[in-house]
Image (cartoon, rainbow, N blue to C red):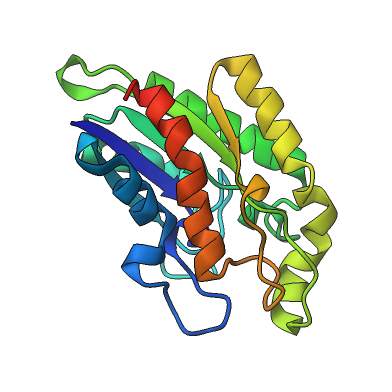
Length: 212
């Protein structure tokens, strides 16, 4: 059985834009990916609300720096055959980075960590699937507009930057924005159907990378 680790933020955690909390387990995209892959793979979800690629954000009682916590996550779940990384939306916050280029550099750093990690038992590094999140959109919600609105234009650059980076360093790439779009309720999170769409969209790519 292959192991797939999904490393992301609230879009992976399953945050519902309507304020009702977390999507039902079966609606979260890692769960949909698991259902699609079936018994051939174990899909592990590691989503954290507010997680960034490499930047600190102390607005919550958890370490949101994706680079700092990643080695612990890798050690926890080894051996891993494929890691799916979907991060970058929170990097668009003006007090975090606010630039797509910064998120690209962050993704580069995450790939470096995954490939250079001292895996136990002589395990090989996993394959890496880099996923660009759906584009941030305008919203009437004043809080989310203040947090993410300034980064709308920058978020539109993530897919191209991530795709180019993936080609350059030999990673897989998937544009989640090709199958899903953010809800206008808050401009960044996904309703259940769009969340499920990401799992369905990633499945054939994951199968190919896993050799299934």
